[in-house]
Image (tube, rainbow, N blue to C red; front, side, top):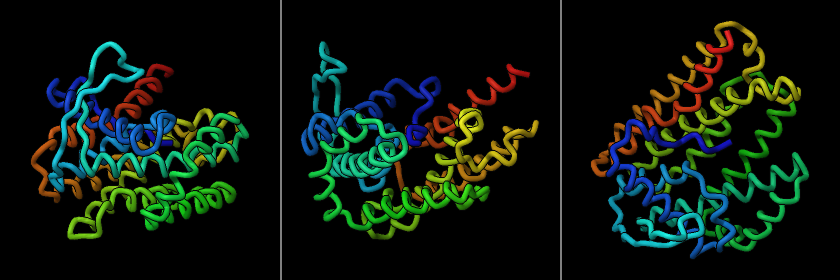
Length: 276
């Protein structure tokens, strides 16, 4: 379901993309060092956004490194590492572990189970280190299962569970910024869930899977109505973000919030128009 919090490359300055990619590589290095090679397979751009956001807010001391890796074996790539990238790596492992187990339950494919098995020991330690976040993830998956079983058409209910979970992930520290960060995560989580469901409408219709958009998915103005709802969520997320005193990396974060998260929806609406 994740993978929507990304950049719009066409509208990003080269220097900003290098910094953004350096954070991505930094989290990848943190995953390797703290959680083993296999954990790097689970890295998403969602946690890169979180690392940049927290670094900009808390102004963490950041170390610049250069590394070779399997993806880039011939040239070293810049990596930014700090306490925020380490936290993002930890959250990436927690989220991935429970999502992989959920995939195993749903599809009974061996690869998700095997990958989750490599993280089991680390997840036990992370649950003790981050009880609030771990509890939120487990609670989220249970509520989502109930929502899917009941085939609830309530968009707020279906997306709200994801929002509450991601809100807890975004809160690194309980301090003066925690309320705002929780709201950013909440609205971003709702956006992600509904965007993912919007992208899966046709597939879910064919497979008779649960999708909260289904009651209106067949209507001619579906994408227009979906866009209006997604716009309200993105606007509130951005409004909360603008309350934070972030100066460094703000152009990267705004690129993602105001443009990057819309990349897949823009593609969907374009494809829909071409079908008419």
